[in-house]
Image (cartoon, rainbow, N blue to C red; front, top):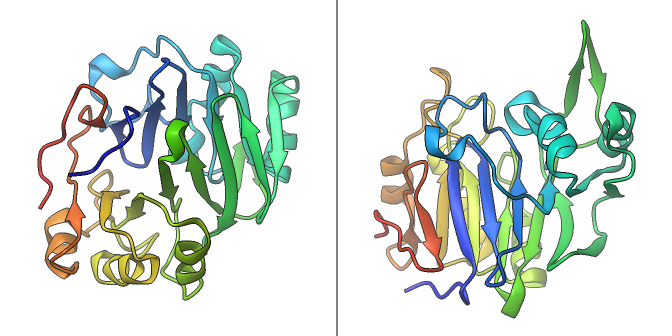
Length: 245
């Protein structure tokens, strides 16, 4: 059974997760909440938010970042170009820019930015603006519990390097296909990373996302626990998730 060291991971649907520490500090990865069609109604009102981690600028990942940032005033971690754009949206005092290979401590969390193979842009009025490169995120929580949120990506060989360097306890991997890797490629990513616990994400939100968690689970090695979380379900803390192998 996965030991999260009393940290809690909650799935909001698509690629959005909250991370809650034993002391109650809350971080959110890729905050697409209020306008996320897969997010349960009870999660759309965010009560506390101390840190935001953004993997890239597409609207299905940061669609509610500016609104949540202005309301809760969390520290906001993003790659340099995206951070600069967010600063111009009234969040300048909150931004914590970084780039791939770098590590910084933000509140109770430590984050390292890794590579991802994907594009990144932001919609600014009628314009589509370059927002730096897409990234993955290694996030360490209190007690040393470490998650790898791959962002939007295809599989790539250096995932093995990510596994060797950071040894994540849990990986969050996109499986939807079309815009990211599908179940077959994501299962290979699991092997490269060497993880034994994984949550599939970025599927079922749009018709183009045809990959399913069942396909992914069937492709994964038998010793890997695949946690198929429904939006609103959690791992760790006082709750346990359904659907693990």
